Amino acid sequence: MDEFVLGIDKDKFRSTNAKWNELMLNDPWSVGYVSTLIEASNWKSKEEWEETYYASGAVRNRLIEENAAKLGYTKEFFNDTTVPHNKAKYYALSWDVKNLNTQKGRTKEDFRAKGKILYDAVKNNGYGLTLDECIECVRFRVICETWNGIILRENNTVATLKRLFPNLTFEKAEGEMDHTYAVDFQVFNSGKLVCAIQIKPKTYQSNAPYIQKARAANANKYAAYKEKYGASVLTVISTSKGEIINTEVINQIKKL
Image 1 (cartoon, helix red, strand yellow):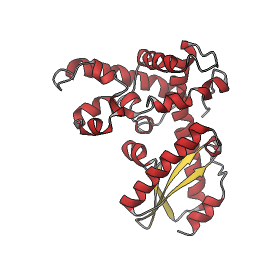
Image 2: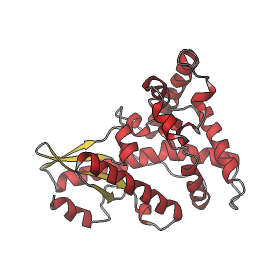
Image 3: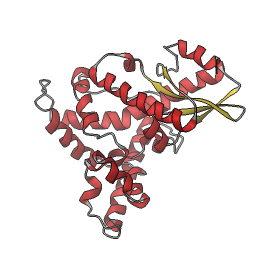
């Protein structure tokens, strides 16, 4: 299977990273649990994944139309990307309310709305971004990076780890665990949890401010995971072909 290729200038794309995270446009409330959605089927192509995600978004919009008032909210509430900014209020929402947003995709029209939010935040950042380019930034992060990261990088990397450690079992973490603890897989030896892993691209090792901020946030999530489950989270840096870059992590796993 082939990967998605970024269709705009890479520096322009990178210039939006900090605001993308700050605005929490990547939150499951905003785009759904994409890691869960993409793992739900065996895709014939990346195009099939993209079209299915949009179709799921259309189902979401219909369900909101039918159920928003019954749940005590306006339709606009479900498209308010600032809801997760207040964690206490967000976590207090009922499962039925969160389920409408987190278990479905989004439409192209929804992406345009998020692209406008991103554009308003970055239009004066010196890179001359257009609205269409910001919409593409949304699409690439949600659709394309999910495919490249999970279907290609994660699956190929786990295949590599399984060859290296045939005695270990690698279980895919569900979307909520991934979001809460930054865990992609839990690793078991004879049914006993020995560690968890998060799989990242080479760019995760850079010193760009937004990457440093992401690493710090993930370190806190790793600590929370260890406190709850009693096992460490290891970061595996790899290529889309599953080649492990930070080979020291292999020795860390051997010692478990």
